[in-house]
Image (cartoon, helix red, strand yellow):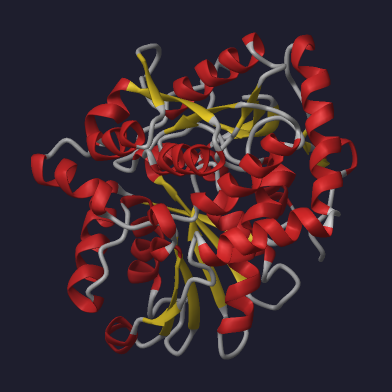
Length: 384
């Protein structure tokens, strides 16, 4: 199959769409038109590619996990988004959207953040391009990601604590969208994942597709399995984009307490129809994960589509498996990854040598971010 360029009517099969207040319909339509024009404009693409190379540090390396491979009886390759500037894949999407915002004449960036990596990337791009940045973050996430809050403020961004609901990513996204409604002519809502109303799922996947494009060129041969963690799902969407036309199995790994693909049902969250955790009355349920970036009750609509048609598979791991995986990767390879990324590692550790991942399999795994942000919280026992 081939991933859609701009999906028809903003839909991936039965998923996607644009479920927003009437006041935001023109803004979303204008954004779709502006991104389509920019993405087709060589000048825009050249500027973005230049920033990705000389500022963000692309291409990121593909590192063979030599010791783990020997221990597990597989060939494991790590796509090192943790080595990109600001410490995660988030910079790929943020630089593209920030350039687009400037092209559209916007002077202010509004963003949501859970683990803080998207907030840090947004604050970074704002500083670079001379824009202001307002970052909404749940107070629970502020507690467990204090280092990233300090980084955002150091870069000049305003961090707005969100005290409603579960005080995590879902609620931060709600408040960021409300702020956008009130300043739609001056601000750009810089959504960090492949969720939200059209054009965000398509736009963010397009900007993150650099991960999969690079990895496909770097890996010695098409891997048997391509695996990445999934919350909203941007790093996985970007990785899968490079391999969806190949024979590789695509595996997305969710947090057991936030598994919209494996425990959810079709519904609407933050402007898109997708797979959503819901209660018996159809209300969005609370998600739970040791990783703030995966503490989200929905998933990007393209993931819902890929799952529905059987092109991608989705698995879950527990918080205990995640912490154990983070430690094992650190002690085997000298790489401390983010708790989010450790979900993908945890699945590989559990599946290796089973029918799900037979001995001798080749695996490409995207390490979406580095673990600096999680060390204080883990040491103090507040990550969960």
